[in-house]
Image (cartoon, rainbow, N blue to C red):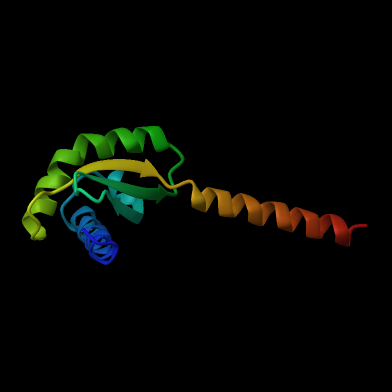
Length: 116
């Protein structure tokens, strides 16, 4: 598959999974996540689903997502028209934490410069 089709599919899967989580998931912990990106392999066998959350218990959340993986994949297959629905692999998106940390470091440097 060419990269434009994969990118379009990444965006479609991201939107559909977000809708499914918002409308159909009963687990309140899972409802706290924000999906940030989806990366589907060229052969469509796997989809890395990146997420972030305000809740600090990432491990518990990852376990809950993995428990709901079958349901999410089934609903995804019902909602999008592709020959093979990829296996979902959930990955915590570290980039937001990284960005916040950089922001804190910059702010600290500015405060130190201001205070002499």
